[in-house]
Length: 313
Ligand code: FEC
Image 1 (tube, rainbow, N blue to C red):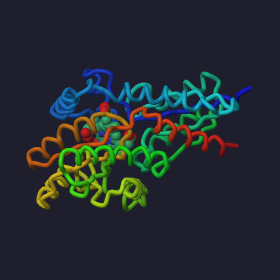
Image 2 (cartoon, rainbow, N blue to C red):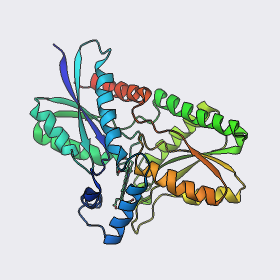
Image 3 (cartoon, protein in one colour):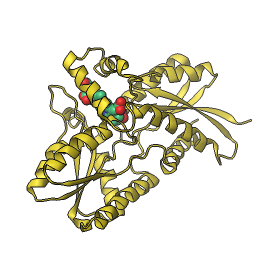
Image 4 (tube, protein in one colour):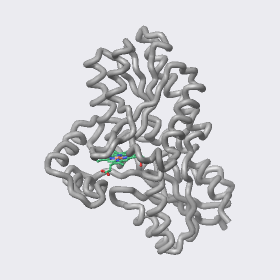
């Protein structure tokens, strides 16, 4: 009989309606309600994005279903994988996912976050919450911490960079005239003094993609920094665009390698906010397509989950 393995697939989470934005924002702010002005500003950003108001929910649902299908195909029948969703800031929360596994009688599980790079302030907090709940529910869990250099991940992202560079060429630009900007969600600067691997992992992913796609003119930039008083990692993409304009750069390709789905930070912060600054500066800006449930990304996830299972006692 196949051994049943639970897979807790963790993602950031998004509200289900505009009415739910306040509770979501309060959760992100660890229980502190946003001001009326902050709340309005966030609701306006959600309302402005193209392709539906909360695309992350559907994208995560599709990723979880596709991962379960990928895990159960060609696995030789030894394991039956059952995926459960666990969200950081929305229902079903990480703890709900672990509880659902326990209720279904699952005793062995793997946790994975839909974000390839490890930081103690991102993936580390997902893992901590899942582990605490797993201990309380007597589920034995182990976790994938990062997969930022998985060859298939580098391959699929390199192809997306190349595809956009082809489009720039078709529009009359030379490939080496296009500045490729790899980006990811900023975090407070203090992670660096904590020896956190986040920045280095992001730079490793970027360098590997650039090498495979034959990109020579690239740099890394941060985006979507939180609105708090402490310093966040920079430069921000909007600052970088202004610097590039001063260097007379006319073509920019953004590759947000820290994200795997279409959501607010991509569809607003890049496609609306950064795009507006680029057009003000007369820069032609494109971005690579998000992975969403691309079979190649599902293959990356299923490979790392299976490897994790093979290392379980
Ligand atoms: O589409 C959506 O509904 C959700 C988009 C979304 C993603 C996302 C990913 C990451 N975040 C990370 C860190 C932080 C830190 C703070 C913070 C704040 C926000 C706010 C919104 C938001 N984040 Fe987010 N993040 C997304 C959305 N994030 C909305 C609140 C308003 C704002 O600041 O814009 C600051 C918390 C605090 O105030 O203390 C820190 C990291 C990721 C990427 C890894 C991951 O997916 O977990 C890191 C998607």
